[in-house]
Amino acid sequence: MIVLTGHTNKATCEIVRQRPNTILLPAPTSEPEEASFGISAPTTSTTMAMALGDALVIVTAEELHINLAAVFAKNHPGGAIGAAFRGSQKVSDLAIPLADMPNLENGPNTGADVLISAYGSESGWVRCGTDKVVPPCSVKQLGKRDMDSLVSNIHGLMIPSSQWINIPAETDVATAKDMYRSLAHAENTILAVMDDLELIGVLHIDDLA
Image (cartoon, rainbow, N blue to C red; front, side, top):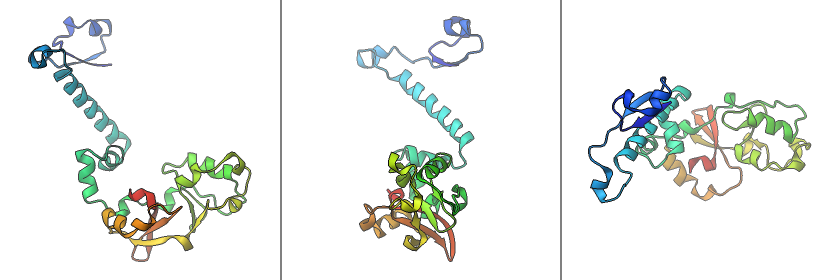
């Protein structure tokens, strides 16, 4: 347990006395909170608590993720870290490599097989070989009636490479948004991120938002 409190000494903090392994983070206020606004406004103490929370989040994110800035950009796009990350973001930064997707191969797979594979996929994407993909938005549209149906019979589930739109890997995300603005609401539009003739990965058009 980590306790953020105005106590500066463990001996005066009842929580620490009851739980000796507790970590005490002293955060004494410079003046009573009533003195600032005339009421017990959550000013200094709240600011300290938020700072501690941010610090814990950053440390945890560094342990769990490789690209800390990308995590903040995705989950807190309005923050300074997210804004800085977006400034130099390329479509290649968003692309999901096919190698990172569970492969259904070419067996007689059902909607249930897709759902199970997507559940175990870090990105939520699933592929069938190297020329068909199922984006997360398509997985979410699967209904009960689709569980026993062959994927080939589920309309719009698998997106073949013949329908992918090639885009250079170094394209800025902002530029890509402008280029494909008219497709923003198109169903299952897949962008194939290319480095010359090499496929870096794919992304759904909504991932540019």
